[in-house]
Length: 334
Image 1 (tube, rainbow, N blue to C red):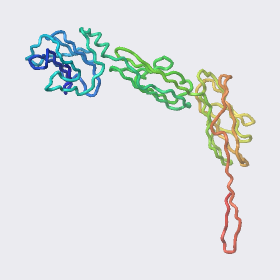
Image 2: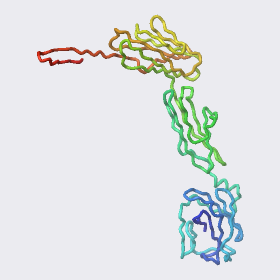
Image 3: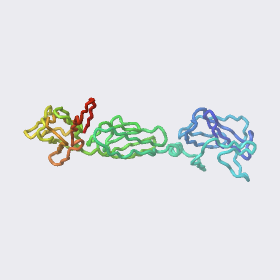
């Protein structure tokens, strides 16, 4: 019989026939090496009635005899069945207060290496990271939770290369760009094995503008264009065509404009850029006006500039429609 005693130690009885203090010999491990509410692998080896061994999670523990009266010297066959999880003592069956799993009985003493192999489970990635598709500039978090014998170590990789400092179960990527697209792998390792899980990140190339959707005549506003080039870009051009006759000033990043108002940038580093310029709607501008633009990467791939591309004004008129002799005014706003 093998059992757990509150306080964190194991004890066992070995003997012949029904249990008694004189027919069984009793042994115990050192106190405090079995945690509560956690799975623990335990192996007990009886080599003879004078020698027994406890292994906890594959590690041999100190143990001692504590009964002082046992005299058993051989195990005998009986007419009753053996039992796992309770004592062979009709007066005190002492059911095991916990859970038992993967119980094995061997007819020989296992070697320490064999016991260690049984005790230490290789890791399994129970919760795997999910694939993510997102826009440039976002923050992405990959999470993986593994089971298996502790201690577990984590290492995240990008395109099969280790990411420096990424050694927890969570990987956080900030301000992601198309160049960050690819395969992310978490490798989980313990003393007996390795396992892994894979997730993909997709950040599409894009050129997105932002500006107020409503303009006021003769009041300048800023157009912002955020460009995330695809991986492998070495140079690219961006050009934006505002409404004809709208004056353009303060072009960022060395951009230029021509007589037709076309705003243009040539960028040679292939990196993410936020481009801006100021534009002023003329006094006579009315209705809805449209902006058009493109970004062309390495001279081969062209994307339209998306985002806010139509801008309109509101014309409010206050008219005095009638006036009576008593000074009451009726007004209509359109």
